[in-house]
Every structure is written in structure tokens, then in C-alpha cells.
Image 1: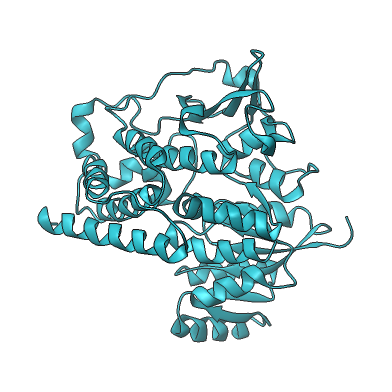
Image 2: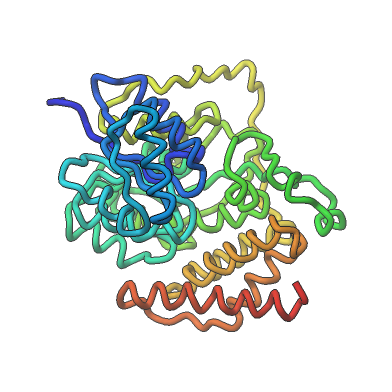
Length: 396
């Protein structure tokens, strides 16, 4: 490598952002931080700025920017402060930046992630919603700009590692029969169905294997997350929904598998730590130390697999239906899920009503074509409006 790669981390205060900065700090000869962004956790962002001394920081509002700039000055830092969506896009497409970690959760991550893609950056995609929402438009932008798109979700990174380098020719052409997307099953894999209506946000956020934010933890519990990952896998690897199978694997040691026509099945294994896929993507096509402990198969002792129960995980069924419908359906699914999960975390709806709301919104939103980003955001806005109407109907 010639010189150090300059990195922008979108969503620096979240779990993926922090894990990224941990890996970056282990290799000061290879990487330097250009920009860090955070939404509302300004104290956490200040600490990260003190540790990594970025050129730029981005916060949510102009008022936050003024306050944060003063806190930076008080700390003796020369970091400049931007704000809002335009600030996020600016640090994503900046000419000085080599790579962008796209780790903003939800639809809010689409504009800056797409800005990085259009600027031809190396994009480390942890924001699956960006690709789920805009699908073909996003992948066309990757092709047009020559951006390098590397998946960070542990499952998609595992698939990436198990596919041959020429997989873009088409899965059938490189001998791939199917993709096996693993799922832990979350905290309610064995909970009696009758008890699911009364589970709390705290219980839903207590993932047995992974340390994640509240929204993605709930998505993991409902398997909406796995449904979004199914859609993401179809776009990343040019697969049909029928070529992607979800397998419940409680130990979270096998992160996904690729099944070949000759009977070979390749799997990527590792401890459940997001620093592994982050390090893989940061250094690709090389390998670097991630700080993750070696996998001890003797301690793991066993690997279990089972088919997902769609009665227990209706969000997975709804996501597959949206993937098959195509067009605006995945954007509608994602928006309805974001509203539903937020309402559950606010204790306005029951856990089991998350899927009910998504299904209701999908039922009222026929899938239409997505010819441009305006159509993507229109589908997103419409789905959020419908979800809000359902909350009103339910008296929530």
C-alpha cells in the first residue's frame, strides 16, 4: 500500500462505528480517520474525536453543530463541524476520502451512502436498508461510478468470502446452486408462542450472541433483520429470492454458506464479533489482525441447524414476499418496519403487532416501479404515513 487510507465513518457512535474505529486504531500505519458522524450522542462523539482526531465531524442540526464546535475547541481539537444530510453527503464524497463505512441505521443512511457510491469510493456497507430501499438504482450507481462495494453484515461478508472472485458473471455460471443465510433465531427462538405478545423491549434487545443497537436487536428478534438481509443478498450477489435459504443456527459460529452444484458447501466460521467482517472489508483483498480471538471449536463443541418457523417469525415471510414482488415493496416493508419497531420500543404496540403493522401496510401499498430516487422516497413516505394511520386506528 502507498500511504494510509483515509476513512469516513458514518454512524461512528453506534456498535459498528465503534468496532470499525477499534480495527482502525490497531493499524495506524494503514488508516487515518477523515470524518466521524453522530446523530444525538454528542458526548460519545466528542470522546471519539479526542481519540481519533478527525478533520471533520457531522452532527444532526445547526444548533448541535454550534454546541459541538465549542466543545471541540474546549478540548483543544481543530476538528471542523458540519450538520445535517448535506454534511453527511459532503464527508462521504470528499475527494480526500478513500473508504466510507456506511453504518447509519435505517433509511437515513441512504443519501450519504449513495453519495459515497456515486463518488466512486470504497464503500463498506453496513446499512442494509440503503440497498433494500433503492435496490437496482443503488447497484446501477455502483456500476456507473466504479465504486467498490464490500458487505459488512457478517452474513453477507461470509457469502462474499465463500464465493469465487468472478461471481458477478452470475451464480449459475460459477456453479452456485444456492446461498444459505444463517440466523441465530434471537432471544425468542424457543419462547412459547402464547408468551410473545407480552415480551418487553428489554427482553427483545437482549440478544444471546451479538451486542447491537436497540433497533437492530428487535429486528433480529423478529427476524425482520434476516428478511432485509435476504433482500440485500439478492441485490449484492444477483440472486433470485428462491436461491437464498435462511437457516437457523443458534451458535452464530457459521456466518453463512454457499452451496455449489458439485455438492460442495463452503462456509465462513468465526466468533460472533463484527470486527472480523470489518477488518476483512477494510483490508480487502489483504488480511489484517482484527483483534478477534481465534475460534475455539472444542469450546463450541456442537453446531445446530433448523428451519425457521414462519409462525414464530412472520416478518421473514413478509420480507420474502416483498423480495418476490420487487419494485417499491422492499422500501415499503423497510419503512413500515422502522415505524413499527419504534412504536414497540416506545411501548405503544405489542411485540406481535410489529408484523401485523408491516403486513397491513404492505397490503395497502401495491408494488410499483422505482425509476428514480424520488420514487424510492415517495414509497418510504407513503408507507410511514400508512403505518402512522394504523397506530391511530389502534388507538396508540
